[in-house]
Length: 416
Image 1 (cartoon, rainbow, N blue to C red):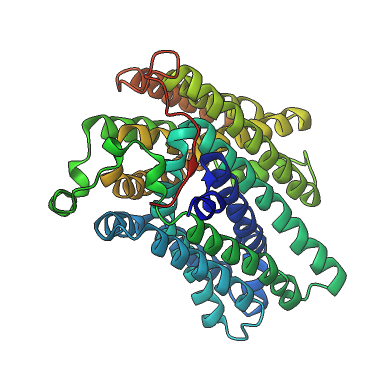
Image 2: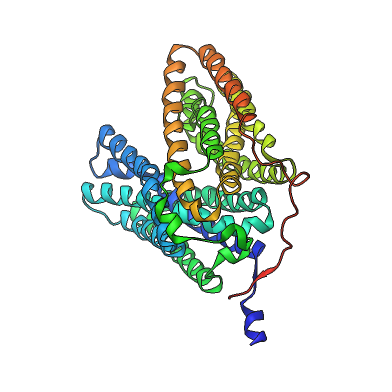
């Protein structure tokens, strides 16, 4: 019996790393596809309006549906089922895009891929948060995000290479993504078998679940500090620009060629990964005050990225990537420290939906201000980020390792 338990052991760090590789492979697939969604739909007869509507619906579904999938994951407690189903939907629909011969089919598949993200994200983040309670919330989410971004870089580059070799044939370019997709699903199922109950990593008192209590609560009954935290993230994201606008500025002002933009984007994704690691370690050491880096970075992005100098614009893009790295890692880690396990998937659903809505508003606001003048963008964005910075200190965020109680010792997962 002891031998069986030993073979089944999986440390929290190994769980985080394997889950990170799953995300790496999944990002390889769907970021590869998203890099050519517009041209693919255009090749099937789509107009610019159709592309905008379809991708907009997809992004809205990826965010808004988390308000449903999060609470449902909490109610059912079937986090693995939601995670596997969401990944499967994404990883199956992407290769099918390459063989879609009708525009309506391709549009449906594009939206379905985004629905898959909505289905899995709250449950996936909850599973990850259990192991991260041992590794350190910041570090656990940071390592996961860093691995995730490796796939975000490799995927588009692979698709671009296949298109170059095949003369812009979308079928093999998207078909090749079936290989990392199958590997991601296989690895995810292996992890689910090895660690059926990741909540065992977390302190039993924190992860204890009362089904009746969960069913009786609604997502708006989440802790007040969580809502204050959502307010801080909404403020800072309402003054954050999109890479689309950055690339528009690069090309229309003759600072970089269109061919150079994907290279800059790949570099920004590398900055994303490095910033996630630095931010995660900083959060575990210094606590919530380390999040002050986000509004500061967001202010620096517009100062550099909307200049008339190519070097400064590239630096601005790298700062943009660093800010995204914090958003995708440490912001999610804090949620796990503010909300106990029984309500965590609901919290992740609400948080993601709010973050997405604020991001959309921020993109529209900065785009509108850009049409007025880049100076106006700088003044307004810096003012917004100053408000965000001040609001952050009213929340009462976690204090960090120096002031917090000791974390549990790193022990392997052993099936109950």
